[in-house]
Image (tube, rainbow, N blue to C red; front, side):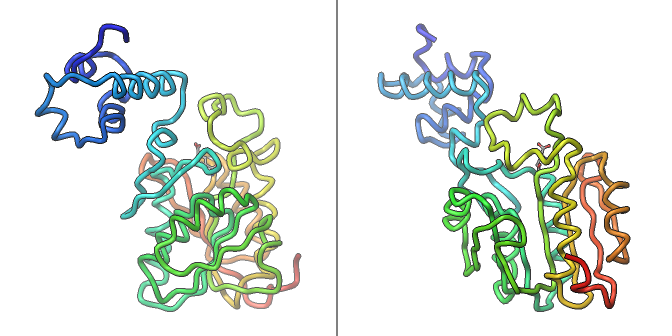
Length: 271
Ligand code: GLN
């Protein structure tokens, strides 16, 4: 990177994400960059940019360098304490908005991370009562900064965060990757506890499905994001206490979400 000096030199270089990295280092818009291609970088700008390029080359996700990621209609702060929001998770927002369209709702987002599910839904429905939990205090700190409305944040592992409370709708994007999954190497900068869940990736999903009846109101709904190959196993887990099981594909046509309604008379029988 020694010889690179002008914006144009950098734009022509082969580095991953060079355009957004330039925008970030110079704090300029894309439009400004392409209309100032002959501008020379100052020493400070060059040092900042070269350091960012190096981190990106080493695999740090761009969102951790910029400290933010767009999700649905909002921009979210993200840190290495939280998973980077995925576009697939926007599917859960569409499903939830459709289900409780113009209706009141007490919502629980389990394992909120940066808060995307709870914050987006609360922002769209300021009259809903939204609770969001996470085991990680550091993640909750990020989620609180992202909130645009009043959200009840609680710390704890899954339902331990909300003892004796019940909800109309429970949503979660839990960890669901197998501990030994070979793709984890590509996700090494993100918190492992937000990604993996036991040998089959279903450990946390099982806990949520088995305990949800105790925390759902009569005929309440449970909506989960899951791995592309977990749909059948999850349907089997849901059958005992849930009915009207609906499955959803993400925008890449992978099975990605499942929603079910609590059967009448099952609440509280299982814990
Ligand atoms: N969908 C994410 C991925 O495969 C994982 C998110 C999660 O475990 N909830 O990268």
